[in-house]
Image (cartoon, rainbow, N blue to C red; front, side, top):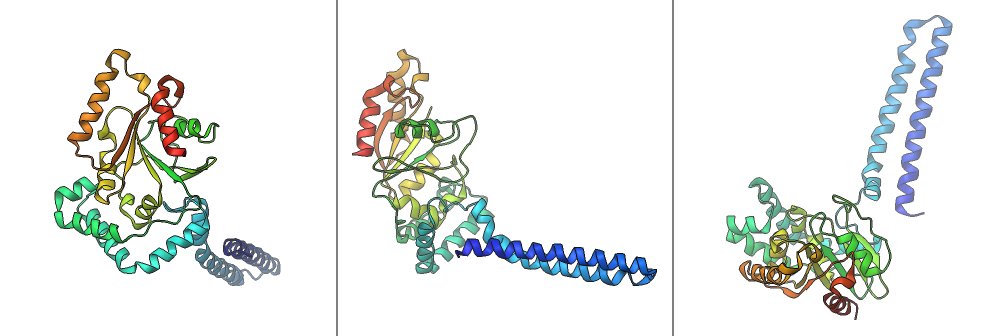
Length: 304
């Protein structure tokens, strides 16, 4: 029996005990009333209440173990094998994690939510983060080639995933669909849909850094400006990881303005001093054939 199954069984037994305690208390209380000795009615009800309280206290030991199954933490994006790998990394880097936690605590106290804010606030904090990030080991992945898509809400990540995979697997719609990192398998690679965050402090954790380092390709999706994702990009630059920029929904730019828009994006990359950009593509994931030159180049690069 697995640990999760054992915890479920223990939780079920706890609530069965609670049910029996309530049933027994009510039955004894009914007997007392039937006997006409109402002053003794408090004893069975008190006993039932105590039993129920003990039962729920015991159940509390199992609920924290079971909740992650339904509401996984940010790093629970693959299999329990990866979770064990993360646990091993945590044990090996206790000191590193403690220092990370100190940095996160300071960020929370000073209301610093992004790497840019940390850099503005304190140079020492940036240097410490870079030193700590350098010691984090890449997460061991199950597939040889692993891609991840980063982008804020409504940039078309899910549509991009479906077009790359050639089938509708990722849910599309308005607003943020993905709440946890979601894996999808292609023929020769695994593709991860990362929740649409651009200033979430969870990106500073050992778990996310380990995940980032384990990836073969990091794909940053934007629509209108590089500044949509500079907070994440700056963090990737800080830990010296390379990435590719994908400008999706390029069809929304009027034809007569497309050359100018392309130059605008290139200028922004220089203005923002992006260091780790490998490629820049302009595509329409909903209709890949519309800008097929960039699309084919991108697909060949990612899959070959």
